[in-house]
Length: 388
Image 1 (cartoon, rainbow, N blue to C red):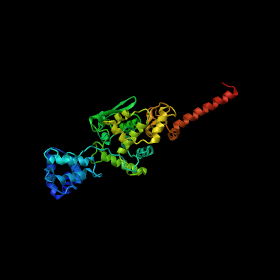
Image 2 (image 1 turned 120 degrees about the vertical axis):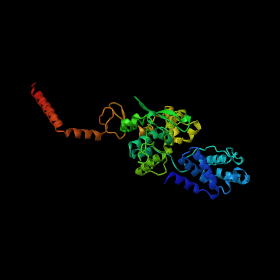
Image 3 (image 1 turned 180 degrees about the horizontal axis):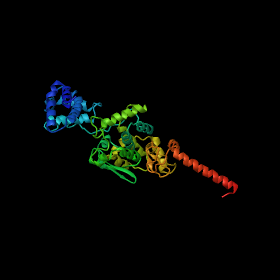
Image 4 (image 1 turned 180 degrees about the vertical axis):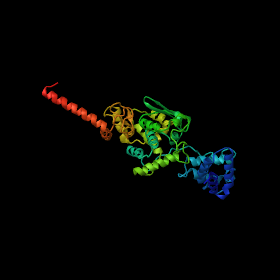
């Protein structure tokens, strides 16, 4: 279905008495070069609000029926099912109808945003769930994205805005420039635990792709949008597929990763709330608190550690995200790695067995080892007999 048809179908879902004005609103937006997808999104938000209005929109804006307009507005702003976006779009639309001025019946209604909390009865992410989601991702791209989101409180949209020019490497790993919703959300963050996953993902990209600095770091694999930046909707579908594969509850959302990583950082005695604010790109400390899901027991354990009464426990976030450290060269590797990326030595018992099996499968190696064993046996026998 083309976008033009979708737009017309969306307009037709409004009440008949509202459609002419809605059509004028759409025509003006299109004349201002607003893309059709954005207009459809605005109309979908506006439609839920307009269904509550049973009088002429023009009459409301011109305040021909003030009491009725106030009653309708009061009903909309007190409706818990309508979000900040609905109230904001409601005010924007009537300012447009009223030639840019806010109608009197709207001036006393605040459109201040209330930050979304978890629904009652729904718990946040646990370390085990984060590990299961990452382990059940099908591609290296998806594992890298969710590992980064588990380490740093990232917004999903910030993932879609990363370009190759924003990624910098040094001896310690990678720093990435992130671009949030506002200027305060723009920041340069060092990733520690995600370094092995980022390295593996970048190694798989073609050299020609990496040289084009305007290319997105994470791009879409679908035939329709291949090469475009990965969308938040695509990340949502990846998450749902991973949840299904891991047999986890289906109501986990992308923003639960932001809450999880913020809570883990706040529980770490080495991070202050100001540090977490900077890492998350928040504009105030008040907003950080809305993402804080710490419990009394967690805070009490943290106080014991800070005052030296108990030893510091390994942080859950570090346990699930930290790569596999090579005992020889200390390099960090992916948790699923069999060989070290730095010294190429085996890291697991399975890797050791596979390496030795492949080694002894070669006939030339067998002959060399056989010859060495014979020489060693001869030397031992000569030493026993006192011969040189």
